[in-house]
Length: 479
Image 1 (spheres, rainbow, N blue to C red):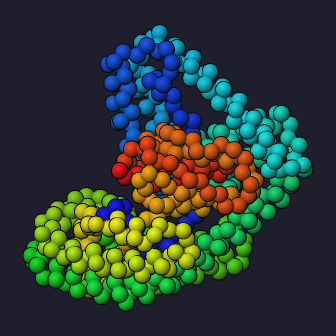
Image 2: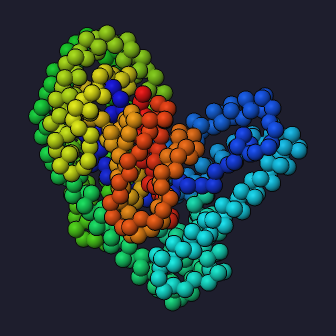
Image 3: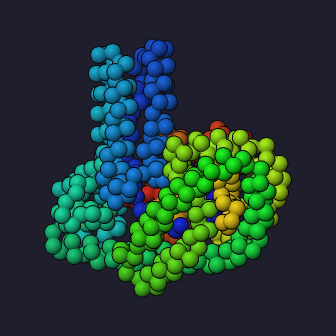
C-alpha cells in the first residue's frame, strides 16, 4: 500500500503560513574548474548523503518541538545550523587553493543572487503597494531585513511573538508614518481575501466530515471491530498485558495532541471574519465530539507517540504478523469499499484522481498499519485511512494528482493577487531539480501539466513562491 492518509485529515485544516526558503549552500562539486580529485568527489557525495536526512528532519513540521511551533526562529535557526555544518564539512576536504577559488565563486554567486532578488523585490513591492514610493535606501533595508528574517526567523522582542508580528515590526522600522499607514491598509485588504479563502476551506472540510463520519461509523468500524476481536483472541496473556500498557501510553500522548489541536491549531485569535471564526469553532466542536475516533486514526504521527515503545509495538506486530496477514483480504476489502464511498464525497469538493487509480494503489497493509491495528483496543471504534491526493502547506491551497504519479501529473494552485510566481521541484535533500515556471501570473486558479517521466522513484516537493509566501507540496514518483 502506498502512503496512506487518515479520513480524519479533513478535520486538520491547520493553516501553516511559513517560509522555509533559505540561501542554499553551493556544493563544491558544482563549481566549475575546481579540479576535484575522484576521492574528493566521493567524499562530497558522502557528505551530501549524510546531511539529506538531517535536512529532511529539520523541515519536518510534524517532528518540530512544541517550542519551535510557538517561536519559529528556533525552526529557522536549526535549518541554518544544518546548512552551516554541511558547508564546514565540505570545505574541510578542499586544498587551500581550491578553498580560495570556491569562496570567491560563492561570493560572486551570492552577489549575483542578491542583485536579482533585490530587483524582483523592488518590482514586486511597487506592484503590491502602489503609492508607497519606496526610496532606494528603504528597498535595500527591507531586502536585508527580510532576507535575515527568512533565514533565521526573528529575535524575540517585546510584542513580537508571531510571524505576522515580526514582518509588521520590520515594515514599521523601515517605513515612515505615511507609508506605514498605507501598508497597514493594504495588508488589511489582503487579510480579508486570505480569510475568505480559509473560510471556503473550512466549509468544505466540515461538509466532507459530516458526510464521511457516518460511513466510518456505520460501515467501516463494525467490520474492523469484528476482525480485531478475532486477533485479540490469538494474543498471549503476557502480550495482552503489554498491549494494555502501550495503549494507555498512546492514549495519554494523544490527550496532549488533542489539547494542542483545540487550544492552538483551532485558535481564532488572529482572525477577524465572524463567519470564519464560527466555522473554526464548529470544527473544534467536531474534533472534541469525535476524539475517540481521532485517537484511533492518528497513525501519521506514529513514531512521535511511541519513541522507544515504537520498537516494541513493531516487534509485537511482527510476532503476530501471521495472524494479521490471515485477515489481510478482509482488511483490504473493507478499506477499498470505504474508500470508494468516501471518495465520492471528497470529489464533490476537491480534485482527486479517479477512484480506480486510488484503489489500484491499495495492495497491502504496510508494517506501520499492522502495528497500529494490533495496538488498537477492540472495544474502541476504529476508522481506516485513504490514499493521499496531496494538499500543500502554505498560502496557495495547492494540490497535485495523481499522487503517486508515473509519467505525468497535474499541479493546481491559487494565488490571491497578480504576482511573479516561481514553481520549482525539489528532491528530498532540498535541491532544486527542475524549475517549472518563473513568470508573472494573474490572480486566481493556476494549472500546470508536469512531465515527470524522467524523474526517479522517490519523494519530491513542489515549492510555489510568490513574494514572501511559500507553499511546499510533497508528491511521490513511482516507476
